Length: 306
Image (cartoon, rainbow, N blue to C red; front, side):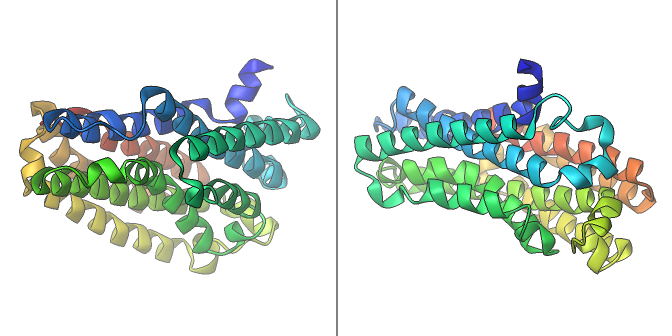
């Protein structure tokens, strides 16, 4: 049962979310704070609680998506369906309620502890959007993909928001440098996730058609969907090239400086593979490649050093 639950909430993905926020807080902002003797807003415990709340939202999204997408998944990937095979629908719903309540209690505690009640609405907002995502947003060929991409970018932005008061105390040079790096990472996450979502739409085209969904692959056709991916890939490559010509590039370790141009080469390779892809299996493999490509951005954060 435990293995089934971990699969349902996409535990490896949640670990990536947690690592991302930890790196933003400790590797990017933390180094800058230490250099100028500035105390962070969040203590280690409070950071852990914020990460738990963020991970809770993501886990709820995965469960709700699997519940609403069950008919589609039975068509596209029946061998991977967990609900009604290993976990009942009622059990999955109860799990989502438990996670939602736990996450909100933690969020409420943090808001009270920091006197940040004005941001308390963020938790129910994202949970609410995740509830309507499979049934409403996902039916639109742009809204669903963009929402998921924004949620991915917000993972890093949430830590920046929480630390904004300490961040503004940094010297102009460090505030600009750390702000630019976090912004660049958010753009990287947004575009990379959007690309992967389009490829997943290409993979799931058969099931989406049966359920009457209007993905880019269905509304615009596979060829035009690929053109959108190529266009986004160019923007993503341009962002990485910009990194190569900034002072942040010099703040990376040797591995980081080698990784940045490698990411551009990977985009070219993935674009070639997309051009050749025609079947659902092809798109599935490409989707998995893009999933690992997203982790490349984490390596940039790991390699950042002042």
